[in-house]
Image (tube, rainbow, N blue to C red):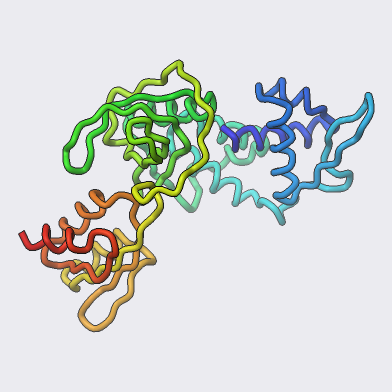
Length: 285
């Protein structure tokens, strides 16, 4: 994963001093061009990288610069460490282990941290996360059987882009070869996910009216469902008179529709430019 590689490069520069781009490329099994881009990203993040030409040349962190608590306190690192552990998937475990090797104190007082995360997934979902991240890293196509929110079952072959964790649910973003467009798939609705041998070159994202671009939605709820609304839409609510107003975004009309219909007569769609009529029509049945 890119995050793990960036952390690894930073660690090598901190511990080994001057390192050549070729050495870094061999260590992380990527091209020298990729290493140049990574070093540029590290530079942009505020860690000054200096290049030296010649036979003894290479890259190193600027003399006199060090990562102090102004950048990452022990408590900051501990919070990130426990968050990565709670994700309970191999790629994130590798990063948490690397953090622990950087700061051994992360392993102490593990039963005493003030924030406890619980983001664990099912065994099947963890396997899918692992395969999906491998596919992204290796630029390999993936196939799976997918069940939509309406119950439609299709077989998809896709080119993975990334993973989203949103409101407690994992979503996989990819370019779908079946639909010839970017799509967002809910991991829990996937079955028989396979990492294929077919390689691909990442496509530039297109402007697609049916793509994963978020679409705004304005809802009005009755006070009878106040607690549920506050839990499902944190920091997206306003209370006025006897109603609760929610301004949110969604990625898939069918999924948004299922959420709205689950509130029955306690919700009203105030505005939605794409499928407002569809919401009203179905909610009246």
